[in-house]
Image (cartoon, rainbow, N blue to C red):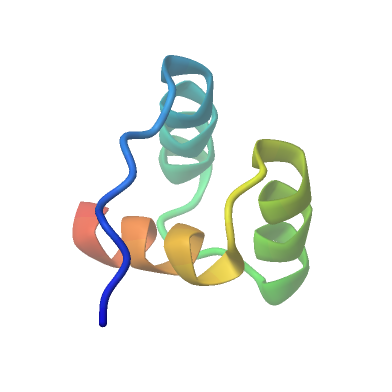
Length: 53
């Protein structure tokens, strides 16, 4: 079974958008850092970037 969708906070979205403007593709290290900082899983961040592209 899948988890329900999570709405991202404006802080999380602002940071994700800023990173996306800087680079459309994340390094593994940057993804790990964002994951810790934003309290999201690496998979969530990876998927957000894929969908945003």
